[in-house]
Length: 277
Image (cartoon, rainbow, N blue to C red; front, side):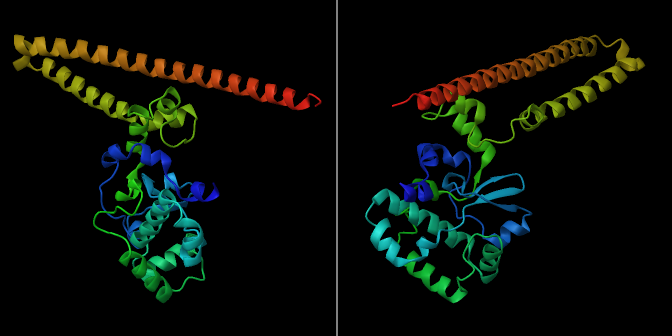
């Protein structure tokens, strides 16, 4: 059970048919390239979040020491096919991440690998590993590791809308729970609306300038277009405000009911535990 929690990626395997939307089926970039791209390496202990990135952050799971021990493979990992595929996938991801000695130094400094791992030993170990898996078909690894880096915003969309993960909870929370402050939520999901309003403001200003010119004041087609665009802009603004209000109200009610339900469940559990046997 503990090994499964450490290695398996059930959430990503459930949506593996849609992972092409979140990232290309190519190897992840090595660690020194991640740094050159300005990404901050954040440690996660959840294998489902391994190599998932968001803006200037990438989540990486530290490689467990037992994956570098052949005895652990013989005694524990090779007896379960799914567990072995998950272990091979995680180790393959480190073959992508640590390709140069500088990558190994970054991995040690970031707490991703044990400081006792030496470059010569790593090269020998990973070369032997790669020689014993099919790197072309990747049939030896979990379906998740047929893709490298995955974009978190795309995973959120997939997890909210694609079966078999569709549910009200997943629709609201997405793939990964992030700050639940309403300001942060609307900043993440509705920032495009600000760009839309800015474009509408420029359009309306241009129409107003055009109507003020002598050449366009008597132009009937331009007058009709201006009238139609003005009405459309007003409708768009009203609809946007309605959508934001509806979303805010829906989230408020959902969180209120979820908090109340959780409080009731905790109280009920405490009452049961206090009943003498």
